[in-house]
Image (tube, rainbow, N blue to C red; front, side, top):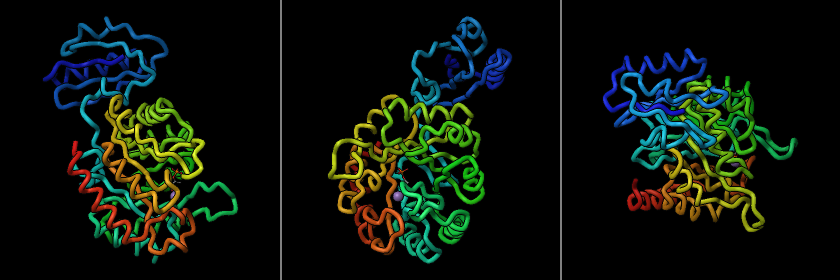
Length: 335
Ligand code: PEP
Ligand code: MN
């Protein structure tokens, strides 16, 4: 059920609707918009009778939701979500850039990359402290030590930190040191992790699972939102196909497909899609041309010695060159 309030509905009228929802034992999600406020209802085991709401003061419409998702939709919130971290934004007018190494390896490495990321005008620094490696014998990240380095990067360079939580305990740690919780492709359907992130005050960057349909991905975002965290960024990072010339196949169509259904911002991760350095810039350019709100990109001060995802890392120079191209493309396709 979705309750659409009349434009200009009073705060007390909204509060009265919320009270009825709670009396019924359900959860309300108030989404203020530019022209009207909508209230999503979750936690109802069956259909809710619209008559219960239609006659309340300030209510324009009570609509039954037939789709599997309720909170991610443009029906609930026609205005795009702008995720804000301090004065930095994802989903706003500016192309959001989330750049940094795959893994935090040392303070010197993180600082060397961060200096370039800061100079480029990007506002977000990425880097994993807990790495979901395919093999248990590969570098797993520095753990909390890595998070401390990231917190130093934030202090020193004023960049906002995006870093992955691999599990529920990891969310506690990311909350301590970071600004945005990344949920990786492998964890997209880790429902206890999604729920925990949904109870966080930090925004969540949700990667698409490597074999997830659009609906499964959007429903994963719905898990986070259903717990009350509406600051979700969707990240397309390529899906598994039969193609052998690339690590994953970047699903560019995901950008307009998400746009048609959801108010959530969507960013393109060309690095994990490509898996190869030379493909990253062309795919990122295509992502921006397709209307992505931002890009996530792996960059390293010395790619050949990178402990994780070395083959796809851009050099500092390649990164800077790519960024100027992305900004030029953005000028043309600006939302
Ligand atoms: C990453 O961003 O470093 C990462 C592990 O990505 P993904 O979950 O998309 O593989
Ligand atoms: Mn990586």
